[in-house]
Amino acid sequence: MQSGSEQLNVPAKAPGGTGLRGRSVTRFLRLGRTGRALATLLVTGLCTSYILWKIDLRETLHVLANADLVYFACAAVIMTLAVLPMAWRWQRLLEARGVSDSFGWLTRTYFVSYAAGQVLPTSLGGDAARIYSGSRRHPGEGSAFAGSVLLERALGGAATLTLAALGFALAVGHYNVGPYLWIEALFIVATILGALVLFSRSARRLLATFVPILRRARLEKPLRTAYEGLHAYRQHGRLLAGAFVLTLVVQAVRISAIWFVGKAVGVDLSLRPYYVMGPMLFLVMLVPFTINGVAVREAFFVSFLGRLGVDPDAAFATGFLFFLLAAVVSIPGALILAREGVTNARMTRNRMLQQGDPKAPAKPQS
Image (cartoon, rainbow, N blue to C red; front, top):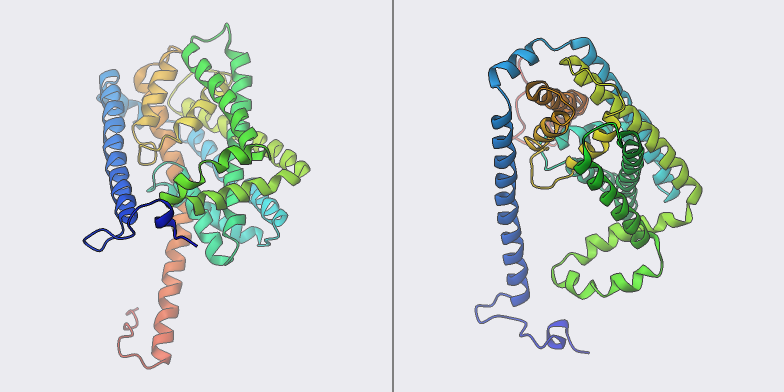
């Protein structure tokens, strides 16, 4: 039987002894990282320039200094409590794949993923952290965790776009946000097509044509794991329907948190336009060329709310408070990681002392 390199009629080794395929993949990945860094600088720079062009920094600081902390606290409570039903949903999705874990650990992992998301690119970084934590806790169940987390993301997207459709109906003839409405309509169509590709059996043949390309780029295994993990849920229609309804309710409640941060800085709008804005904001936060959406999020607030007659300084302040809101929600996760770090260090020290290891760190002075 011929090897893969013989079938492709490519020498297995280059004259220097390094596999050509391996060198090509390494070069591709290096170029990808460089391109991503450049795209991040470009997107962040453009959004920052737009913000500085629109706002008066001194006035913006005045608006933030006089923000109503009661409204902000209400938003923080909403976003924090929203973690609980999402952790319960994750538990049900995992049980459908034969993986059982406690509600407490899943809630803990959700909060930790929020903390991770503050330093990783976009909110997808937190998803990767959850998959990694679950796979380490349950060896051999990587597909189940990848599938459940990606399904949650898909459900969140579907719920977001359902709310976008509602916002579309509410906004027509009332708000001058035409371009955003058509973008939302485009995403609705894309989501429907994506669902057909993921859950249709007939689409597997089409997807199979990309396997050789993915294999050469060493992407076949992770993408296959994710796809199989998602595809397995097509047999659980009732569970998917219930999870979607729960996700829809949670997303609707979370949008009210945006309204609260707007009220905190004096934005006098009803809740209705936020159901147009909220879904678009959740989509903007998925832009991969940012660090946690910095500048992109605030530029979106200035642009969208500006079309509704909101002063740019108040609009930017709303976006900045929404950023602070995410930071506040991540505090429990950061505290959990700090406590676990101290506990693990103490356990390591005790184990080294029991083994008589001279490199054991000294006990801290009280």
